[in-house]
Image (cartoon, rainbow, N blue to C red; front, top):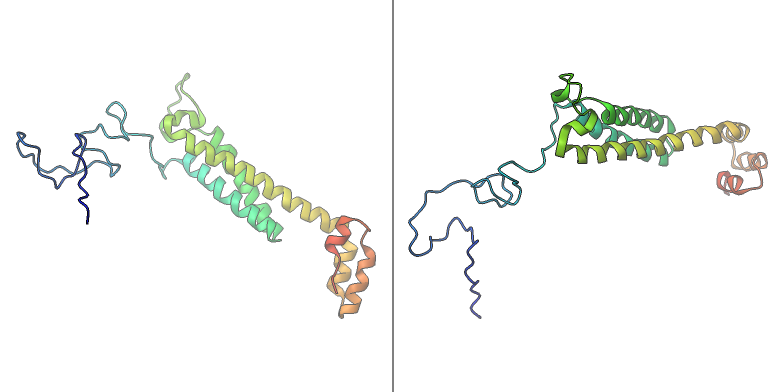
Length: 195
């Protein structure tokens, strides 16, 4: 087997390796944050002695609403696609409310009422970007969920006679006769009862 020695690099941070020649042993120190930093606060995730972007704080109502908007919007869209428009409409409406309130609300830390203080997600600083993305994505999926639910209800109202006939049919031949209540267009072809 060939020798697989790695070249010595000055940035090698193996905690189990022996110290280089001429340097005394140092006591063991835990790594900070688990992001590959070398324990002195100047790792890749650090900038100027500060940590990277703030993490999600579940106690902050704005961040919580942004996440709720994203989740409710996605599930509302899925329920709209799978033909349960009432749940899709409910979740889409909730996601719309949570998304708008997350974009316009004041975080708990910035609720001091200072006149020049930033409002909404801008007050979170670097943590605002993922929360803004979640809130906007929630608004988009909420709009799609509401659109799907409303189009489903509009279709049911427009072709109410067909749906009543199909639901009241006791035999397959009676159900097939309900196709005469549909228009001769793409919508009629989609809704048509198949043999």
